[in-house]
Length: 223
Image (cartoon, rainbow, N blue to C red):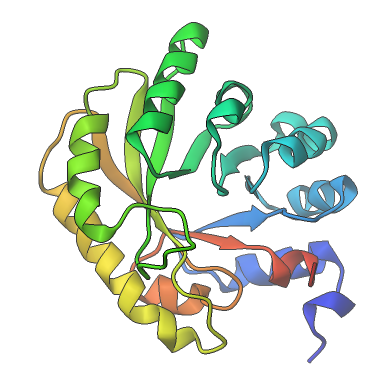
């Protein structure tokens, strides 16, 4: 079977979309992709583009525009929030009250409510961004008081591994948090999206309840 590097971006997208179960949405992780590749992915059926960097997202947006929804999936720095809230339809990588307050402030200027996912550091890795599992519920409670933010779910990455099964405990713990938060009925908090899994781990993520999967390599090839 040919690998993704030997197929076109469009062929990779169509194959992935045919394999995903109903209710699971594909986020095409466009880090390192050329604008024309992102445009090809959208033409093949991608509805959500995931961006790791605001500056790269701006370049891709010039090529694609409103033909897709735009999700920030990389770490957001405070000095990039103003641009981010103007460009993105969702921020999947919220991991601090400080950044949330800045998002709320900048969204208020635009008359916009920003859907966000809380990023969970499910692998408890010191070098990774994200909130530790035990900090998720307290943060969600604080975010519920911000009028221009709506918490729509959780996101996690998990520890990098060649074995997809190594991700399963982290995905399972994040799903349990997702379900717990959904029962708390916090104002401004709706557990709708569980974003887990990338090219190496998305099949396990789906088995553990993910309904957003962030896939880059299997679409755009190795970067």
